[in-house]
Image (cartoon, rainbow over all chains, first blue to last red):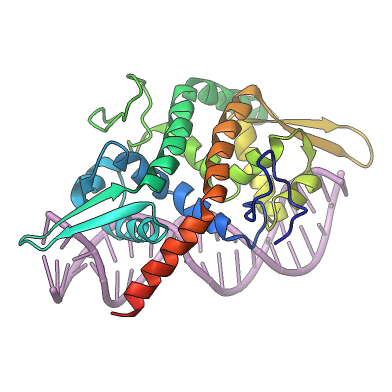
Length: 133
Length: 133
DNA sequence: CCGTATCCCAGCTGATACTG
DNA sequence: CAGTATCAGCTGGGATACGG
């Protein structure tokens, strides 16, 4: 691992997401990926079944939700509880680790949602001054 | 916008990232995208020039860094300061809004880095039990 | 209901080369 | 130094159909 990369503020940990080869980068991408963050955010309220989750995370396909859940389960952020009933019932819930991630993710999400007016205004100005050139 | 989507906890804002068509989802993707988060994180320490940034964010190509910076600038998260000297010197720095985003992002990044041993252990167990089947 | 399997394409991405 | 242009490949991601 390249220890010349910046640490920003945290003490010397063996993992550094700024280094290309660090495994933490992969996990960060699962967590911040297109569907990973929304999935974790949706599960923060409590456990959900597959199709409930699919309705919450508007726009996700079955395939991507399935794929996303597998990656999050493998990383130990989500727990999958399958009841051997018929029809099958499967519940997904955050692990304690997953809750830690989800909290921080939701803090980011809420911050962005709360500042969208500023973002949209900035975009308008950017597009205007560029369009005039 | 679909107001039936969950709000998780924040009060009634006009923006909801869980809704497919909400513009906040696009901004969240800029911010949590493959290079967006690392770029904002790198700039948290202070302003950086293009190639400094490129060295910090290990693995990013010129093209993707350029593209990422444009998106972040348009959203009002990064300010671009170009000196008309020769050779050119361009500094990138976070706006106040960008700092708010970067703080929350770094909180997430540090949390993930700090728990990577758990994540790696979880992956091993997942792969073992699956491989045995 | 809970997924997996398959097909297929847009666009993200990296490599390279080039300009101011 | 600070980018833009162009090209080609890879894969993320949607649609559909099917299986437990």
